[in-house]
Length: 553
Image (tube, rainbow, N blue to C red; front, side, top):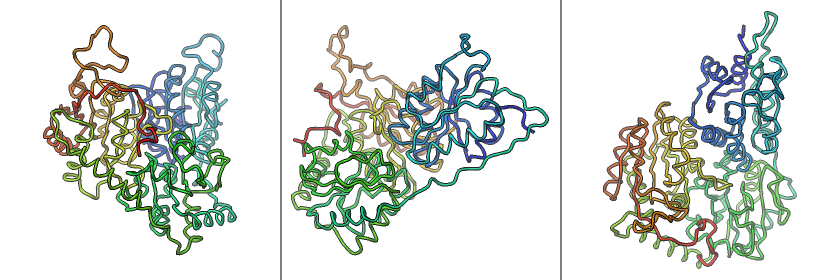
């Protein structure tokens, strides 16, 4: 016999297949968390709801089923809204559970009272409901969980008043139970649109494939790799689309991205939107005469211009493999091949340049080479990258060969995701090595979650790339009474903060030290923070590297 509404919630989540819940407890949801633990569901207790919400949202991306977040009402829900928006904008499945005031106290100024249903609906959740009694708990949770990942993935919300959480079933109550939802329904693309896609590709002089994170979320990487390998299509991944196809593929044109976009006359886009990341499909970056083919499982994400193919990314890719038969793409234009070689040579020169101070590229090469030396090739490595220059430069510095191994700021360029994402990645994939590449400013959003990782025994290695500022630091001679808004404290010892929270911490000011500390961190197999002091950088107009001028090819 169940003892309370809290236990019904826990049992329902267990029957839905939930194994982990992220959150931060207080009155009255602490009783839910205790029931979760009692029934074998791991509750990962964070220091801040925002980080917990980001963790739950990326967990949904990694696993393909909703991440679950538990927070208190009122301010707890407000603090969780960034995760709701992160889920909405990135198409990550997320189920938010929150406590609320007793129903009999509504409108009386109750403890943490807030119209949470209206708030989350305004934030764009797909479903929001509050059980009227304990009998409806299971049904509502099943609908919320299923809705989060059926169709367009996104956030859903269930509100639990204190009297529902604490309700004691009478002797006649029978917990009916619920069933775990089946896999989301999938559909093939329209045969006529597949035929048109094939004709466009076969008639193209230089077709280009763009691979988005939607492919990774759909776990369609094997089929998309087969499509690319068979056709030899030149391709470019979006930042979180990296690894769907190996970055080492000879058809990868990331190093000549701008020129490839300018030259392509047909662009096949799988699981990505024509938003700012792809320059809206505009002629400023793309060939003005380019024909676009967008393939997505969400109709709303397909733009009106060009050809849109609505369907499951794996099934549509399989249709294209069959329909294209033995066709292979024309050779990559020599101008692009040459540009790629030139840019790769420049990148290598930058990585190996001798300097009195550490720079992003030299540090990343040291980390990359050391990991290649000490980490078994069979080990899956997941990179969590956050910051401005830190994140942008890391995109080209760490080649990937597996899907879902780069987690970054995503569609909204969100800072603050770092530690939440790292914790979720380790919870979702305990056998993976999680590497955090954090700008010092970005690290500040979630640094206290180092304690969460330590307490929960989640080994990971976090590199804080410390230039003492946002985008760039400030020279010591600068008048401290009029510091620019980008200035941070100079060379803050983040490694000492980590030590105070129970992690292993070390500082690196030389490449030798970066290498030594990286090896030590891997050997320790615990939460490690390496504070890498790099050059301040030059003050210049602030920009985001991905949106750099078309003049830079």
